Amino acid sequence: MLQMAPAVLVNHYLEISRLLAGQLDFRSAIRAVAAEVAHILPHDHLDVCILMVDGKYHTAYETGMDTAWSELTSAPVSNSPIRSLLWGEVDYLLTDDACTDPRFHFEGAFKGPIVEQSLRGRVHVPMKVRGEIIGAFSCSSQRAGIYTIEDVDHARAIADLLSPYFFALRAAEQAQRSAIVEAEARAREEGLRQGALKLTEALEQERQRIGMDLHDQTLADLTRLARRIERLSQTGDITPDALEPLSRSLQHCMQDLRQIIEQAKPSVLQLFGLAQALENHLHRSVQDSGGTIAWALVDETEGACERLEPTVAVALFRIAQEAINNAVRHARPASINVRLWQGEGHIALDIQDDGDGMCPHHRPGGGLDNMRTRARLISARFSTGLRPGESGTCVRVQVPLTA
Image 1 (cartoon, rainbow, N blue to C red):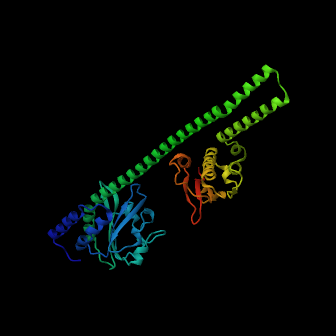
Image 2: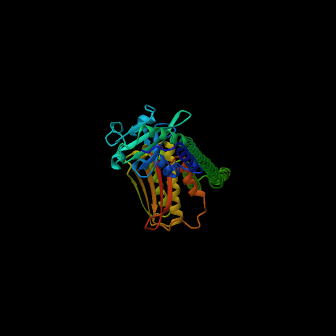
Image 3: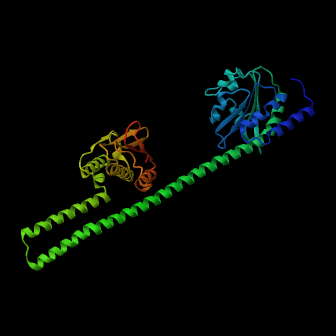
């Protein structure tokens, strides 16, 4: 290569520094200086390899040629053809023909672009900040034997100019990623907090509903029974005909109590498992609505749904209970189908009906919000909407098998 006057060389270095100013990402920075670097180190391919903070992975930014090196967002350093340089085992790498140089060819080496693009002449130097290697600066040419030991010194000078700027870009990117992760974590935490608050409010409303049911219905019935028994005891008219309405009223009262208890505590679920509890609730809901709705439950989990944690099973039951009740009360369906099935890494529950779809006058929140909240608290995915290409609604809950 031709010798370059020191003053001219300095001007090129200054221009590289000027071109770096204002570049906000790695790729634009390397492309901005490529033409100026070519005055010092002619090349067909120029790239900067940046180590991630853990030092185990790296990513590449290139110009001149687009290769598979820059297609990966991260790659193990152990597979890099210049790993000895990134590990600090050598101060530089200089080769006349990288296509045949054994230093670039070892088991597991990501060397494809070298051969595919015929990158023969190559020079690599480390990029350092405060003595720590943060990456590597590399120039490659399709001509063999183009670079000399003097070019190693030029490459080091360019690397010294690039290193602080690329170090700052890496720090900014890391800070941005950390901020995004923290924001997402806060959003999840706030979502769970709001969900738990809504569920607590719903549970309080349910407690009040049970209290009112007991007060307005069961307690009132028992009070009337007690007064009738008191009158009978005073008159002495205790005959079978007098006791018969008392017995009938007492049976109604017991039935009402049993229904309230069933709604408050899914005993079938605890005794017989999720599938049986869903089938029992589906049958009762249809019967209470007049028995005209066709229904079916299919369990394709091969017993996996019965191995769920009790809290997860209860949450799934409550979600299905709400979805079935909504369909029976509001959608006027001809059929309701419940399906339990196992996907890759999750168990899914589908509740489908062929009714009028989600009611446009349905109050926002309420049961739908409760279903979403219950799903979120067990780390499940929840979705609801119209059945594709059909009438009716589909509610789906997907629970990770680790739940």
